[in-house]
Image 1 (cartoon, helix red, strand yellow):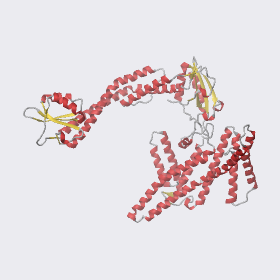
Image 2 (cartoon, helix red, strand yellow):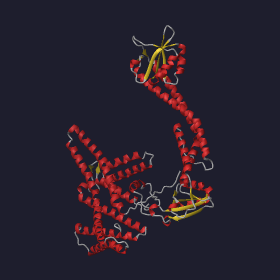
Image 3 (cartoon, rainbow, N blue to C red):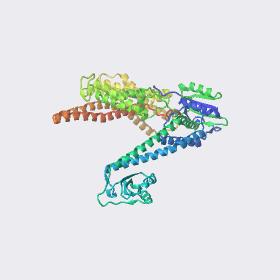
Image 4 (cartoon, rainbow, N blue to C red):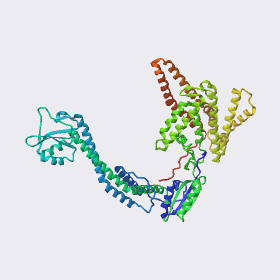
Length: 636
């Protein structure tokens, strides 16, 4: 947990015909991070890289085609890993997809047409209902409907309906005239007016215009439209059922195809990093050291004639920054990885600071935002994040949960619930201002010192002993920092005599830091202007002392925000007290409630930012070296 996970480079040489089987096994295990061999070896002129662009494009197109088909048909399916490379090939997959398309496309078109007709009928019904009973003259001003009235032979009613079946319409004969012709109203859409007029002309439609009191269309029109809507819904349900039946019939094949396409795409991705000779294939990649033995054993079992070369990351000759980084986080610590990721990945082989960030972030957040009520609100708010399917969102929820728990604990120590105070375990910040400042500075010194020690440990791991001793955050600089703190404490706080040993050691440390660049200068072959070098070195020393002073004083903000938290509540309760007599106390309670909401939202955000800032600028700046690559093994 305190270091990045050890990685090993595995170079695999197998016969070409065994290459896909080996890579498939690695993909299923999900531990192989492929690497381009050209980044490691230089003498590979005789090897030829795989040409996978055309094949990749073909599989990508097939995958998109399958996804689009299943989306249109609302077919769902899961991975079916019960498939091997021999069971399917590109031609067979294409054949199955085309078979599904041929059977499903007519059903999908039928469903889409029915859905469109149903929507139109429902829209028509909504407008008709607004006017029932409504006049038959067009001058009534319908925005969506086209209403025509006229006479037609009774025997032609069914033929008229057949000719109009391709457009939405309602035919309602509402009266029979003495001449035997039916007085009929036809309701269609305004957009279909030209089609309607053309068909009516073919049936010798006799248009009727009313000058007297206009007849009204009764409720039977609504009933007829409703019946048509029911019929369309029934047909639509049947079409969807047919599609669902089709999907169930092909579910097994679809699951296998989905898995097979994902496998082929991942294989091709791995091949981009592979090289071939006439008969063999070479594949290189990183695996966690603890998984290396099992991986090599399985490769040799699959391909008996395989040659596997294993190298520790440190023995590859690669820059440590180029080695992929895998962090070993437990489920409890993992949410704090979000804070680390925002800053960067620690370089391979260095100490992973996540556990230190977890403690420092929660302590600072709780100290600055200590209130039982506010903490419990954060705990409750975090529960909503856990409902998400996104893993990052869940981790953010866990981080908020931890912050809420820390705030609750400090609220109990301070004796505060939504700003109301009770008997506290610790003295309340507002009553012990100087003590809060002292504790904040001591906490800051601890964090800065931890950063110095981590930098020393990282330098020793890299066998860079000069950096471990003489770096601005090295052991000598740390010793000077601690000696200065001891001298200041004795002189100004304890007011006791300062031991000459302290002063002597501090002077020696400062002299070592100051003179070390001069030694490097005189040993260097290329020398810059000596005067400028001296001035630059003096400025560096001033910056060294000012930097540590600023870093230490910066932690006073922990106490300042804890006091601000308490001070805000003093203002809120004072304003509430002033307005107690207004509105029977309602205004007073409203101020308290809104004040708490304001503190939770605004100060909660500010405190989070400050906790992150102190970690990034005062802690990480002492030791953090950024890596370039995250460990991302190929998986299905």
